[in-house]
Length: 349
Image (tube, rainbow, N blue to C red):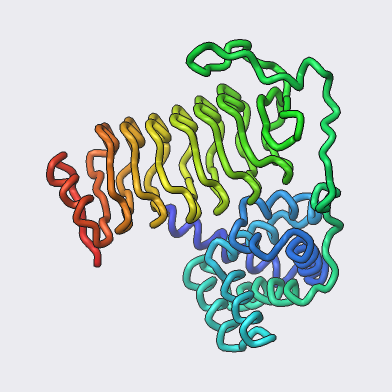
């Protein structure tokens, strides 16, 4: 039996379990609603971060949580929310359209898709949110309880490379920069007051499988996640303005990358050696792709480049998959680059 058929049967099986089981729809809707009310409805566009909240609030409903997150990845939550904001209530036509999308894309039964959509609709009506952490207050002054010697920036060479291989997790004195990471957990949830990740902060943390970045992150340093061979997916939120060179170099398990609008440059060697990466959609805010940015991504067979790209560096796509091609959206420069470098491309207006 093929993979697609197995996937289809698995989702249908989940749908049957949900409809016949005695799961508490109210509990699921309230948990989702409290998170959205407390932390912002933009989480509907960030299922990866929402996953951590729901795992804590609904520890016994893992299958339902997975279905809910899958629905949000189909932009169902965003569409339902936009309808409610425009009309004051979610339109029936929008509800039906979202249900059909889950049936078509996630292979759910009609009953299961109706139930998943109802969770989201009900969550939009929840009045009270989770209590926000104290660092959301305007007068908050972060106090990081760490020994004085760990408050210092790690020693660097004249090239700016960390030389002391810090073993502890350390922050800057104002708490806004995560300087080094020394944890042993498989999943790391970045605190909301952190706005920057320092150079080489997570480098070599091969045990990490997931890092949840918040919408407050603005910068990620050079080599920040270099050789984090266990990380399978990463979502760069909309607020990220700069990601340093080689930040994800050698992340050999990284197969899913989401880059929200906002980033202006794919820096030098940013994803070099990400051997599990198959395709990537570069947002239209990106204007430059640096040298060797996707070099040695041996499974990468498709990149979507928007109209605003003005520069693509040397060997940016060297040693990608044999059938690699670029989907170019109305960009004469990108087409010329493909012709000069012998790369296959398709053109869309």
